[in-house]
Image 1 (cartoon, helix red, strand yellow):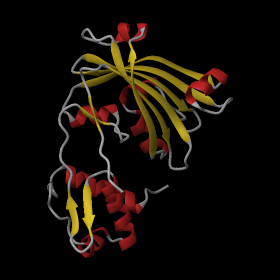
Image 2 (tube, helix red, strand yellow):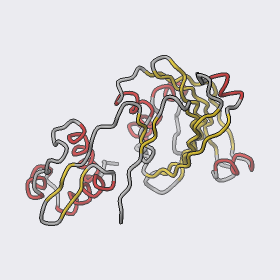
Image 3 (cartoon, helix red, strand yellow):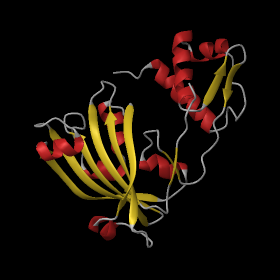
Length: 239
């Protein structure tokens, strides 16, 4: 299934903004220019621009054009409102990274797993526990559940690289929407065993429910972050 045209335009413009081809406070080329450049309709271009505006990359003003308002994040800022992968985060911050899979198993969702994840009872899921390292330090403990019918073929090796890259490249499955909750919890025995806590007795826990383009929840993840390594960043728009 080919990628939707507006998504290609959105991703290309986003990349150019991040690489300062279009710099902070600069106007994007005119609508006419971009329509010709991307060989697309005005509605397709406006949809791509709308996505960029929703994510805080640009701001539109009638009669004035489209201003770039993106500014590069500080080191170790984690975008709370986006589906940025750990690998993408580490690459953006120029950090050495690796992922160790300590549990990889296939399960059938029972009442307990359903209550915890909200997956339907009776479906098959991959269950993983992964330790994430930055610059050699274990900083995140991930507990993942993925629907097997959507992530078919997932392996330990793929989970140590990037599950999202595998889903996108091999299965044409994209993470479109993520609902997240963030709380602070006391450390567990597993946290103490696998994470470098540097004296902290609590962790930042981000719970995510992730949906694909069909509106199907295919992932439930609980990420347990060491407090000293991440700043969570979000942005909002006043309606």
